[in-house]
Length: 403
Image 1 (cartoon, rainbow, N blue to C red):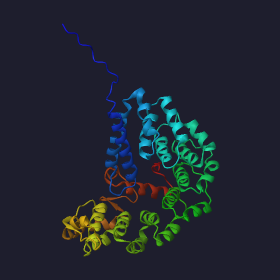
Image 2 (image 1 turned 135 degrees about the vertical axis):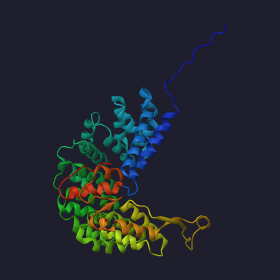
Image 3 (image 1 turned 180 degrees about the vertical axis):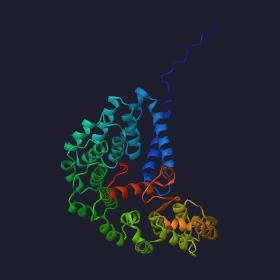
Image 4 (image 1 turned 30 degrees about the horizontal axis):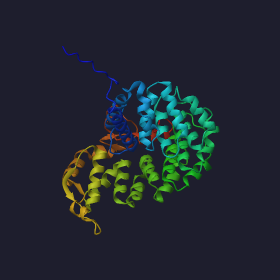
């Protein structure tokens, strides 16, 4: 009788699947970062994305003791999101040796990948990283100190923030300053920051920095915000225009819409939808009748964002530009033109209720309250705008996001 030797298994999992899960985790994290303030994604969709991220994290974690060696290439790579995927998985494993790998790689990192490590340090528990982060805050490079400040602030572990943040908020490297301003944003009891510090940062021609500074100022309830965003918006600053829409008082609707009307078509309509005020609805209804198909189509999408009701009508190809290449001429961009009679019928049926409301998103009036049902349907931009308005008025109903 022939004896057959038993199969010897080197692994209790399929090794080839680990990098696949890690790549997918990195890709999904990139999507999460890009959609964190999206006007097109609802909270329920974001929750599903987070579930997919967690599923691939579990897929990576099956490697157990071999996880560190298998993710070493990702951890020391040059892709921000792959670095995050490896660092987060290793930190979540709970193994001290894996945490040490991450912290050593973080200390040696430079350039954009520091942001990937920062995301992981913010998202993972701080039990095994806090001591190293405190050391980096004091003795590390400005980039590492700012990353440590943000991670510690997100875990409510940043002691004496004024002593550590002052130099970082004014740092000449924009990426360092952005991390510092985000740390200031998430602090529950933020220290006083002198107005010149805000002014210096806002005068720098760096869009990401200005965005971080204005967000921190709004969530802190700085009294000068309305005047400054109005002045910046008049100069065309995109972030300031967005905050004008998000914070606009009821009695300034006409002025805001007049300001927005001077902007290019896609931005103009998006700002009106973010405004969500009753007069924005009437403006968007008028824009749907415009002969410009780009404006009419954008207005149809804005209408649905505010009312929750679709007015999609005929699909139409936009005429290619005079200098369009052959591919663009053969495959022109297509848009959904709005069904104007349907929109007018919806206004006839619901207009009185909409006019009596204050700020509309997906059919919910979210100016003063965000019900559990509204949370399921409103988009992420509207959700964070609601939190920012409440914080600006003096009450943080939920904390801002650190990532």
